[in-house]
Length: 423
Ligand SMILES: C[S@@+](CC[C@H](N)C(=O)[O-])C[C@H]1O[C@@H](n2cnc3c(N)ncnc32)[C@H](O)[C@@H]1O
Image (cartoon, rainbow, N blue to C red; front, side, top):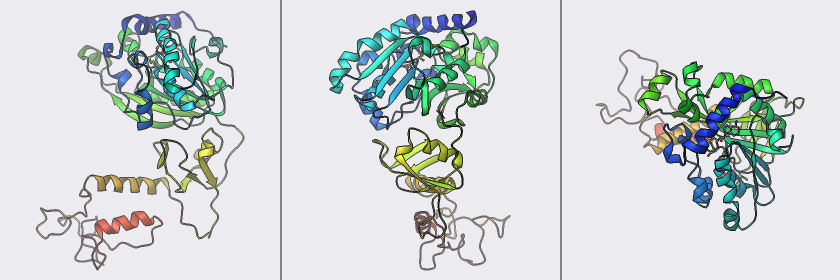
């Protein structure tokens, strides 16, 4: 196994100093990088409210990389810090699962270890929750066994590593087949110049070590993971004028990635539909696999063979049924990702008042029609008169789309009235 050289040791010591001596609570941070993630979902929020405050006060994460549905699973947290995410995971795994945090900074580990007993009383059982001192580049030496982990999580840590490839290789080894690296971190939209990389505060605040996202994705696939899936992205704002000037035009993002470790020779062939069964606590109505794959409970979705493989051969498989659709079954057609996005756009439009589409009645329109006629377009575009519907801006809707719910809704919005014409 590769070892860490002197440069790596310098980065470790600078980062250790930052998290052990410079920062004493979240309030001491100088950029929003470590606190930028979106609000945790309701299940996580409720757990967080029960975690000892010493642990919560030293949270420096940039996302919410803790999947629901991990009851009984073995979880590893890289760079666990004061342990907030491990404490959350321990509540979700229950007494049968286990949670192991690895960190190199004694001051952080001390907080994490000290509050376990207090938390056990809150949970009503003693969780298998342990914190190991060690480097995330050398998980084996820290005491993590190969193929012993179902889900590895990490929150705003991999960017701090001077050798990200070693981290990914170690995680890959530690995961069981079907396991997953589910983590939030900071990425740049370009390669970073040396003065940004070596700046102690920018490094400590998770900016200086941010990888160019494309470079990171290639590295992950090279190590053996399936194609990286993005679950969430948010932009990171740098408020400090001096630091802002140093980074120039480069933009930074907190990204939650999902990297699955899948069997290499177990391909899913042909078209497949996946149906989420709604059985994960906290995800009763829908499950978001990544930004391209959102599953409503009990609604079959057409998925790519890559996605079918990720579902079929990973720890989430029990929450889905997979099927090769056969012709003429009389069943409604499965929904495609585009169908799902259309429906989502429609629902969002309705929530915001349903008036943003071009067919919504416009008060300012003198004719009372839905949109002012377009001078430069007599026949094209939604607002141009249609031959089959001279008095309205939209063609009558055909009722043949497989998405009945979408059609029904569109008709209500756009084509109501006896003629079924829009507006
Ligand atoms: C930004 S903090 C995040 C802490 C924690 N994940 C959280 O969300 O609060 C980074 C943590 O990673 C640890 N760390 C950074 N690089 C590390 C490495 N190479 N090996 C082990 N721990 C590391 C630091 O000691 C620090 O506790």
